[in-house]
Image 1 (cartoon, one colour):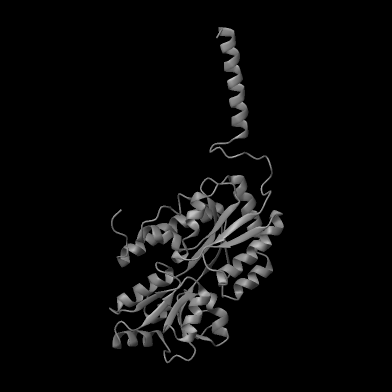
Image 2: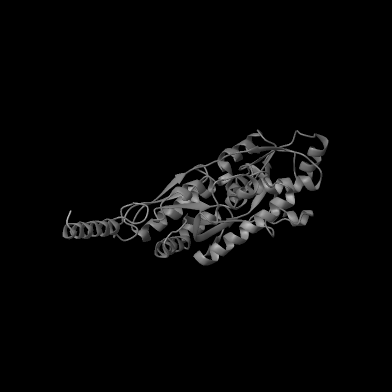
Length: 331
């Protein structure tokens, strides 16, 4: 091949490569000049359908869809204590079309068990939405009238007290460990995947007691369940007769903030579009009314502040796990 022919071939290959790189970004996926969003966004909810968080996030998605001009579809992936959306984020393209709720357990799980994801490394915080507190519940007809009654039963009947939570390693589970360990007592932990299933188990007597987020509000107001104690910092205006743990001698306040995040590497422009749409939806009166059903309020943080809060929560969870001796062993 002549020198001239080799030069022409080299130029042709360079032009072809330039055209290919212009059409294909890193990773080989087809680039798009379409504005974001140009199709539906999927919001993954790491709880079964029908619970308080699922219902409120479905409404939030519906309201955000109006601003985005595209549907926000909700998909449920319950189980593993609310952590199953993290593998979805880890494997998703950072294009804004896959986002997920970030509940408190995702910041705790890496300290208690071996997982392949990291909530700080593998997620891009978008917005903090709200926060929930928790309470100890029994059936309305139960003879248990106080937290002290539960301790007394556990003391008199070792290994017979059954208490339900929304999963192993969740905030309710951690607080129960703290409460009972402090008194040298044991209980049988019964984890459930979803709030509705757990509350039905408490009301029907399948378990003696349960701890859940304030999604129990409608059942307490309806007289189906009795609230013994709250994990909030102060008594609720909704249930002023119910004491908080601090009043009962335990220096515990369990607040579980949650927000929305995308995959690692989500472009700032996409984060801004999603943040603005969901912020507007959060302050819609219809969303506020939905949260009020569960004794919750909007607890807004923007992307930077929420990212900082996530880092702080991750560190706090490590400290709590170490305090209770629940850290994972081995690699």
